Amino acid sequence: MSDSTSPDLTALRLNYTRGELRRADLNPDPLGQFQGWLEEALRDKLREPYALSLATVGASGRPSVRTVLLRGADERGLTFYTNYDSRKGRDLAANPQAEVLFHWAEHERQVRAYGPVTRVSKEESTAYFHARPYQSQLAAHASDPQSAPVENRAALEQKFAELCGRYPEGSPVPKPGFWGGYRVEVREWEFWQGRRNRMHDRFRYTREGEGWRTERLMP
Ligand SMILES: Cc1cc2nc3c(=O)[nH]c(=O)nc-3n(C[C@H](O)[C@H](O)[C@H](O)COP(=O)(O)O)c2cc1C
Image (tube, rainbow, N blue to C red; front, top):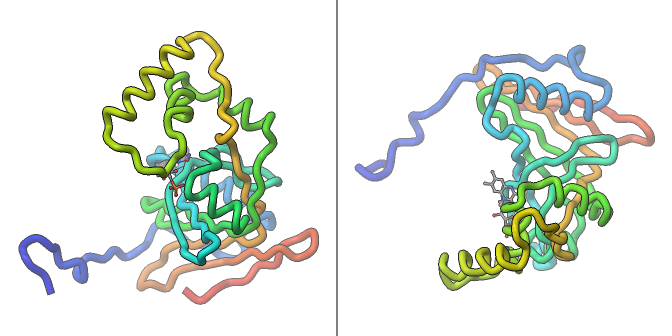
């Protein structure tokens, strides 16, 4: 059913033809596979290909999902920064595991990664905090507690202006204690490449001892 305000979504579909993923193409190391796909996305200037959906589940069992920016991908895991008192922070305190998702639509690719989540060291968070622009540092202070209701935009702007007065540009802005990084220590990866007729290529890597087991999955 459709009416004038709701487009008929059932008629909208793309056939995915951009690429293929064969077992022989897979990097034996999933981090290398991920980095290769991310580099292709950056090279082709996709918009924020380092943005990911982060899914968490809190103590009540209710799932929640939001976008964050990837700030590091290495053998230790996938790192992002946020407010520890935010909803995601509270979820992760109660249930320290997450699944993350990258969707690179122009490349017809999707990557999922699952694993336990730990906080990055205070030193690492502090170093990254000070590498951010001055305004972003103030905004981290202003948004406290992140995800709590705020009366209106003016209240938010006033808080920002007060912080500008307290920490003039050029003076050091201390990292708030409630702000820092998390790292997803990936135990399972899945790489998805769209194919014609919905016959997509999917490979899952599962941690096994020091190595990785790979399996092709039904589309
Ligand atoms: C493109 C994009 C990038 C974002 N990057 C971050 C980020 O790196 N860290 C962060 O805390 N929030 C980021 N956000 C905002 C979050 O999606 C979210 O609104 C906020 O963190 C509060 O989430 P929560 O209430 O689930 O904790 C980003 C949003 C978008 C759309």
